[in-house]
Length: 173
Image (tube, rainbow, N blue to C red):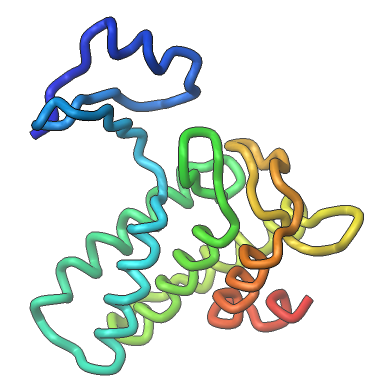
């Protein structure tokens, strides 16, 4: 289990906008920042588990999928605009859309219904994450939805592919 960082470690990461805690890993080799957030790993694992449960349901994966679905729900809902952070004060559209696709795919195997959350995210994204010059989704954004990086090829390709599971019309736009 990670131990708390001392003042010297905190000074090394001073200025980082984090709403969580700093810890040093058990081997004392590196700093681990725990802020909640929707990590790429969480999104991808949620997606893999959702697809796995859809094509070959197994009791052993039910719990891990439910845990990740709960993380995705919590991180999306805690953001003022439904845009979950991937890193402190930095969110990536491909992480969010992968998470949403995982929710919608998991709905088919669990009987849950995340259509309302997905629809609210799409409405918010249409309002806050569309690049004015291109009409495409931005690639990254801050906690309050401010645009960081404009559209980037691989990010937007992946986001559009994931949005096909969420809102096909928006994915095509």
